[in-house]
Amino acid sequence: MGALLASGRPSYSFEFFPPKTDEGERQLFRAVRELEPLQPTFVSVTYGAGGSTRDRTVRITRRIAEDTTLLPVAHLTCVGASRAEVRSVIGQYADAGIRNVLALRGDPPAGAGTEWQPHPEGLRYAVELVELVRSLGDFSVGVAAFPEKHPEAVDLAADAEVLVRKADAGAEYAVTQFFFRAEDYFRLVDRLDALGCRLPVIPGLMPVTNVAQIQRMVQLSGAAFPDELAARLHAVDGDPEGVRRVGVEIAVELGQRLLDGGAPGLHFYTLNRSTATREAYAALGLASR
Ligand SMILES: Cc1cc2nc3c(=O)[nH]c(=O)nc-3n(C[C@H](O)[C@H](O)[C@H](O)COP(=O)(O)OP(=O)(O)OC[C@H]3O[C@@H](n4cnc5c(N)ncnc54)[C@H](O)[C@@H]3O)c2cc1C
Image 1 (cartoon, rainbow, N blue to C red):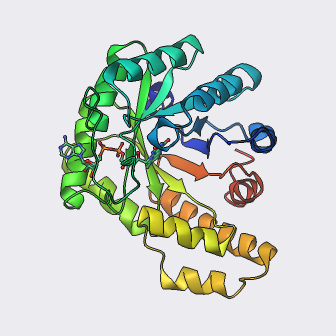
Image 2: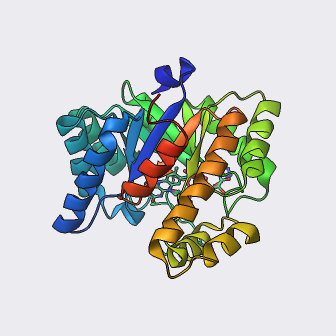
Image 3: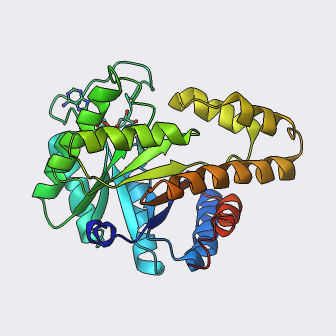
């Protein structure tokens, strides 16, 4: 991944999560198959809160690596695991031929907003995981970034410095939390620039497909949802097709502003569905690239 980004080619990627049921897994692989022809730069598979999906994340990432033409990036967190246990998961990724890891701290096991307690023999911050993964072999490592700052960070400046530390530890790119104001992204990139850090930061886009869902996610992530966008969505609430159409329009407007402003690509939060992502991809003119 690092080499791909260094080549200056924009990176387009899709994020999936490991489902809990067989039907969920069938749905996920339908979405994977429908998105595969778009030839994204990579697809990523999340690692459940508290490491709860460890085995499923490893299995699904392996299946994508073996059964599709896609390049999978496996997420990994420090939550509830000793250093030895984290090493063992990294070994499982390596055995499955997975060389791309998104190194994350993870949210506190008791839920976002509660106090973060590392495992007594574990890692405290994502930067330590970047160092560990890099020390264990030829991995390309990405990290998380937060245009509106991480909820626990004192301020935007401190959070940008954390990102610089992750880059110095060997992270080759960052992917952001989803957000809805382009200026938040550009402010983060400007801060990194001022600190002399050229880490490619790929903005995360969440095409809204359901008004209730976005309200829940905004509450959980703390992302600001501009009133003007909320009004556009509320105007079509109760009409699922209309909500998806407006959600895709909003994602396309934001994605275009980000690309026009120099973003090195886009990362789509798919929620294991393909339709909204395919529509946004096509409207941005990426399907024919
Ligand atoms: C693209 C993306 C993908 C994600 N995927 C997953 C996933 O698969 N599974 C999952 O459970 N969660 C995932 N998350 C959520 C993420 O794990 C949480 O947001 C978590 O709270 C922060 O993770 P981090 O890697 O940024 O942590 P860190 O970089 O460790 O930062 C955590 C907090 O500590 C502060 N900090 C960091 N280093 C230091 C230091 N040295 N000294 C003082 N303060 C410091 C930071 O400013 C921040 O406030 C993802 C987030 C993003 C943006």
